[in-house]
Image 1: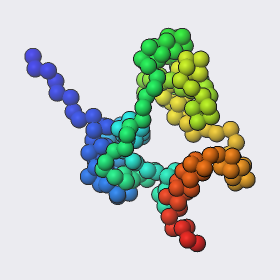
Image 2: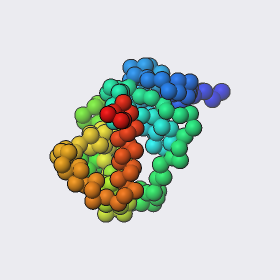
Image 3: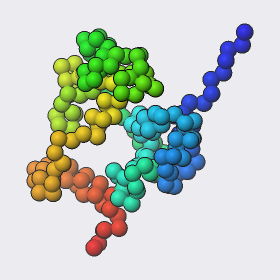
Length: 194
């Protein structure tokens, strides 16, 4: 019997579409359709950005974009994100946590209790985020499902106000201050020189 051919995956479809539309603003409904209607099209876009290094920007990066809009800035990928957590550490943490999400208790492979249409997929999450000085040691890692991980990435305890942000920037090394300035000028290009 002939082996059944697999169709092109959502990530591959999205990569191809972005590359055909470099510099053009694309909305989430179009990208949902392009992905073949997968609810995880956002995850595939993050993989293109974080794992393959494509400079796909959103409203978080550019003030003129609205939520749900994306733009691929260049067809040439940047160096991809380096996954520094070894397979051994990953296995150890998942086993230690009983292959269950440490936030909601969902077990790997079972239907997710908050989204019954999707099976629970586990990732490793940092207890203390790397941006706050955390590391990739097993003691700072925990199993977390994709549903909780999506929510966790959108949480902040307190949104800092301008005076707190300025105080933090003032404490940073000059190179980091210049990186912040560059990011702000990129996000708000129409404000330059005003």
